[in-house]
Image (cartoon, rainbow, N blue to C red; front, side, top):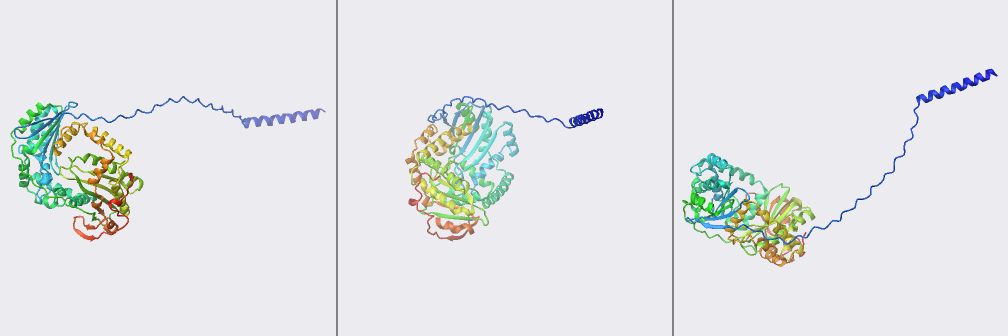
Length: 520
């Protein structure tokens, strides 16, 4: 009995030891606590939003008054007081430009303008630059088809010094031979680079064919003219055209008309000369049908397309309605050409159109750069849109958007004295009335669809349009015959081949073109 009790106690002791060992080596299993049920926050009350107020009609901008006076020598002064900043912008405009260049020296007026900054009879180029820098001022000179511009910006308390420097540059240039030689080398290098650019080649071919013997046909000088250019040519042109009756001065800034008058008398009072004789310009070429000029660039992966016709003078009463029609067609990235050729058809990065500004007949031009293989499709798209703009009035939405774009962007054109000076100069260059900019936005908003259509019909002529394409003739010459006879030239304008036009469904006549009001 005793033995059985001892054995039972030993067994119980072993079990206890086993349990003790097990407990020491095996951690207890933890039971995870249940996660609390997330409580969704109560939604915040949504504030009731009021729609923005409707925009009111755009108001005309109060263009600052222009005070006009004339010096005894015939130089006209135009002063606009703007006291927002202590600066003054002086713009001297000589009413002669590229249209006065001799036929054998295109670019002569531009060379004169460039050389004005390269020294005077009193200071060489470095000394002139130092004098301008000492005033903290800027001087720019350039020429366009009809004018030479000299622009001087300085602090308004330095008006007298600025006017003296401007007069010295304009009336006493040195035309130093060493500086002329440098200019000619720079220009030869620039021309060599430009003639490798398809856009430049296209513009040169377009204007040459569009204007024929008219001076507007020349967009630049030539290597031959640069090599032949002499110092005496610059002196002769300057002596003939830089005379007070052939110029006017615009001063805009924190100045008064009295200060400008006194400063101009001191600086320009001794300037003398008679107005140059006017030259009758040749008539523009007449065009009864379309013509295609193909500037061959073998291996080109893109075609640069220009379409244009001689359109309108800047002072023509239909210029504003035509601007509205052009805005509908191709004036911005929201216009028909861009939305059609880029957004809908994916043919180009951008397609636009523009109406030029000239004293004489300005061009209407549309353009785009497309892949070589879609050249024909792009031409179809262009003529569909050109046909639509002259056959059906734009929609009310298109007219409203065009008016708002042109009207609402105008205040950005008069937000600095420099821009105001440019607009005053435009009044004098194009013979516009002094209150023209006052009512400019009103005149834009007064254009409705019928007026825009009529202006487009008068000045955009798809059936007589000149087409210039710069690209690979081997790939695109044949398809272009659908749009008219094709003249293939090399990059220098030398004719290589002529191809007759062929009839095809892609080449509708003006009356048969797309009649959808919205080509986008």
